[in-house]
Image 1 (spheres, rainbow, N blue to C red):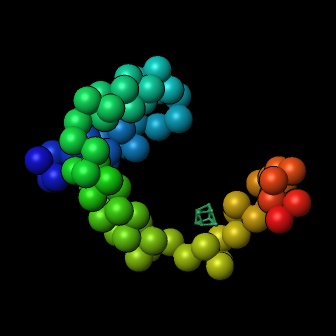
Image 2 (cartoon, rainbow, N blue to C red; image 1 turned 90 degrees about the horizontal axis):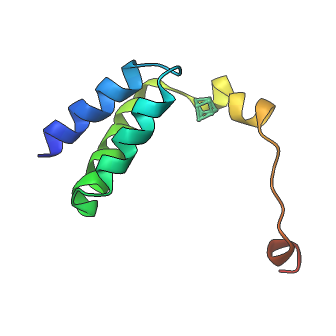
Amino acid sequence: MLLTLKNEFRAVSRSGKNKSAENRKFLQTLKKKDARLVDDAFHQMHEEVFEELDCLTCANCCKTTSPIFIKRILNG
Ligand code: SF4
């Protein structure tokens, strides 16, 4: 089951940015699956991806995403 989910994740990620409707449908199907298996597959793939990616050399998130402050955080 975990392998199947991983293959599904890979297939969707390969499909590219222009398939948002298909991706949304895939995400809806995840809601029907065992949440623990989805979570396990996600964490396993996270480890695999970040073995290859280094955020410190990329820093794209830091360049393109502003920090979000909400009142509750600011008030401590
Ligand atoms: S900095 Fe952001 S875009 Fe770059 S590898 Fe890390 S998570 Fe991905």
